[in-house]
Length: 178
Image (cartoon, rainbow, N blue to C red):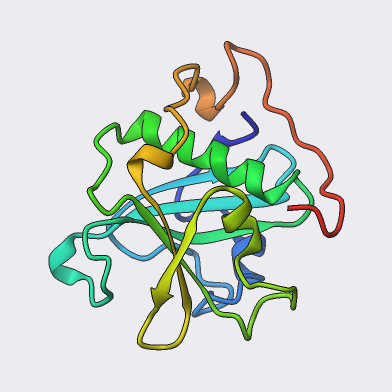
């Protein structure tokens, strides 16, 4: 497990969030929308992940009630697909009751590095392309049956997420590997 627990206004990872295309106000103290959320960062500060769980009555897209990966940025902390699966396992350790619609994420194909298919790292992690948002973003979904098991060795002591007390790993990503 390479993630450590963080929070929505962690100034150590705010620069990563500021470089993500979804960032609405670069430099703002908080980088996560109001509501339920889990924020994870790597100890090397090269990746950040946010799982949001908006209340269904306030959601305007078709997957109301699902967990939403509202931010994932990896600048060399390891393979993105592996980091995604580890973040989902950590999310499940915190929130054991998975919504019926699982977890969704949205990718703006015009704002990500061009590759053969937008959202490739999510596909490598088992997500399925399930449509588009009204704004034209690609929607990817991972249902409960396809998710990794919760990370039961998830350690919250001092905010660390490690395997049975061992420090989390953080490695360089090789360009083009997902």
